[in-house]
Image 1 (cartoon, rainbow, N blue to C red):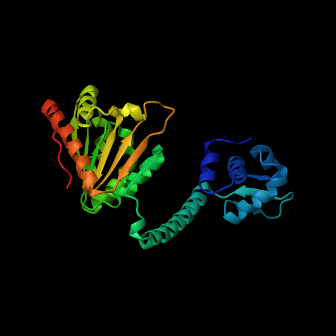
Image 2: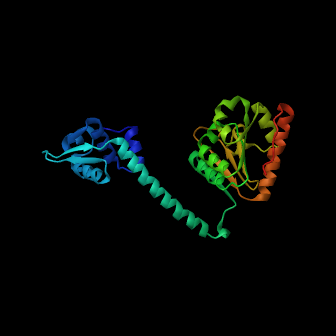
Image 3: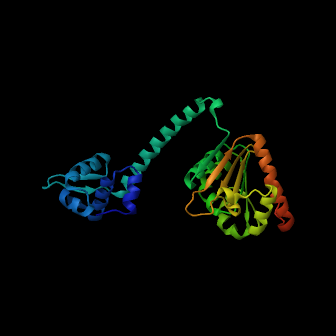
Length: 279
């Protein structure tokens, strides 16, 4: 029975589980009859002809004429996957256009100004959509390379629009961020964890992030155009999901920035790390 990462990836591209198993089996053997495909792939015999017929209609396999019992062969993977990718991109573009039209038609009175997201993927999507709205500046302060890693394309799009992006991180992690020098200005410092936690705690009047399940040493802040911010909090426990606080209110973001600026100014006096206010 075939069940591995290739099958999983094929299902993500739109094939059913049985279709993915049958197609992989045919790629492995080249050509075969339905009974043999069922044995190799684990597709039930009662479903194998239906599955092969579906793959044939989708352009993944073809029936070899003149052979009994009916024999099937896989079409070349490169051509097949490329065709599927083009179909998915076309569908994605059509859906995106339709959804953005609905978004523009939505009444602004219904917009949220403060909301939370939970989970790495949801936070990443929220950050990307915010970057795509940026018109002047993006400011990021983080000690976690994993936060920035999936944002390359969004930062590249922002740069093409003339947006100035800045990343503030620790010098010990500079090698993790070197590839992003094409998209942003990178500022480095080497404050200890104790310095960061102590000063964030002082600015926040001794509020303890641990009390809400957050690790103060792993907090990240993003400010876009000076009027929108996302704070990302990584949990103290691996069993918990990270969560983000998104604020779209210029007054609150200005106060928030004053907190960040105070922390950076304190660190600057110890390390020479200069914080610059986003415009």
